[in-house]
Length: 162
Image (cartoon, rainbow, N blue to C red):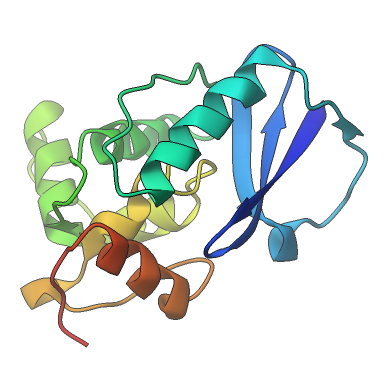
């Protein structure tokens, strides 16, 4: 497994890859064990660099990064829904849960479980969990802190309630 350190306006991000696929994006403060090799020449990291340079320069990144996710089927389904939330737009946790219900033809869901799946998103920013707000667009819940969520929302000009 390989890592690449990316200096961003919200702090140092670490891209983690198996050499072919992106597997995680985390802040350095989230790094629990560091047995990753540094490799700045992987094509996957070059794609990440282009994507995030565009993103942090307020350009809509039109780059698809090949990724591989580890998680439960429920988590992967929720993350797939998150991936479709467009740049500059937001949804609520309820919206995400309702899309899941409709997609899988179900009658009910635990919105708390939806929130938990969102909080375990392994690809910070790329799978845009920061675009998910509470009821009435209230700012809440972000694994790496609400101050960072605010910065990302402001970068994309997404309105929210404190």
